[in-house]
Length: 187
Image (cartoon, rainbow, N blue to C red; front, top):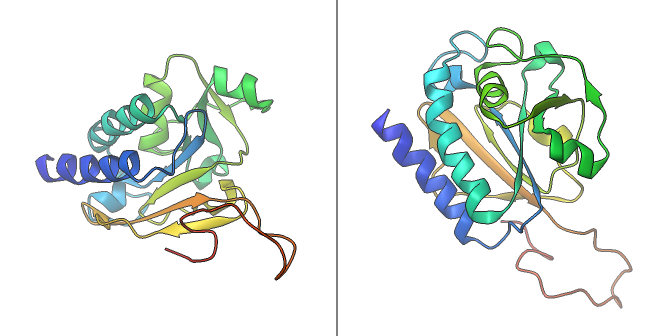
């Protein structure tokens, strides 16, 4: 658990220092705690692992001002746990489900229990996110997604992928675009 906390702390530190997140952005988290523990996705969920990750992701929220969305597992069709404030401000529609470790996943279940006013929504369009254990968050990321190559590529035994988004580049060769670290290149 000590190594896991070091790894997630390094990931959160990199997100808070890279300048891609802004106050009000929506940040999606997909996480298989089974994969973190070295088991096959969906077989060995752990709210103990979820607690370590949640603590640091909550720090990400506090330091960057992002809103968090925790993706449920396939048994809840990858619905998401968000704060009711997020649902209202973004005009999302609430669905009727309460994630539990065996139907929703340990990470989403833990978030649901520890958010101030949790609700479940079916779909979002996030500005950035992290996928821990290949849980497939792509369906919840805005276009155009830009992959980020984080220095910390694993959490426990799970692979970590991350992405941020940028506005579409439209217009062609005569168009002028704002200066952006990744407008014309992938990271």
